[in-house]
Image (cartoon, rainbow, N blue to C red; front, top):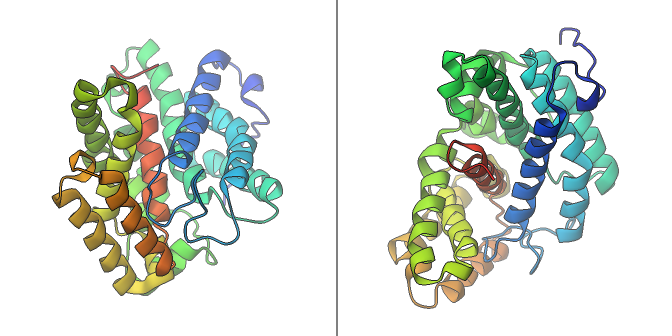
Length: 301
């Protein structure tokens, strides 16, 4: 890894709009907490139960999200300074250390640090490019990640001991690295459209309670298509195929628009737990979908 410039804090980054990087980091943390609060969510930790996990719960996830929020700010600040991937990687490593300190060694958010972290960097970069009226200011955050850092993401160092890398090597899956290098296609082609369409439909019927069903719908839509290395690690190809079929069946039956959808979704959740399946990649992609829904043009809040 090449030497990286030191960025101790976004507050110390010259030329960076601190208020804006703080908003980006807050949005990233909010997206993680919204993902955590989504239920029924097959096999995953939520406020209701721990899903297929015995080593983590909702309290641990909240502590983790709070611990890594400052590093999302640092990543946004680094992106605003057009930092190289080596700089982003160094901040990400510090974020992982903070996560592990907060969770006593449990990996709650490694995938989110990678994916959401890159999107935070892109949000910082786009704000500067927009002020400069640069042509790339019109790119989505995902396309900006692919354009600015895609090659370095593909060619960068790999974590030999991570479950995702082990599953990727064993099953030939692309995983989070390929998703990021290609601009997060699952987020923009699956997660975000499912969120938007369901939110519009449910808002017309039940405006006060539309967001939670939209998150569930997006989660199932992502599980149905993702080559999730977390599922491969826990269940192999059989586990991945079971998860995809179960999610697609729920969607084909009407998703969150079918009668008694919560009971149907909860039944899928229990089936995942019985098989110890946990689609962590879909959980990360759901958080990223919520993030871009908030920060893309027309959605910022």
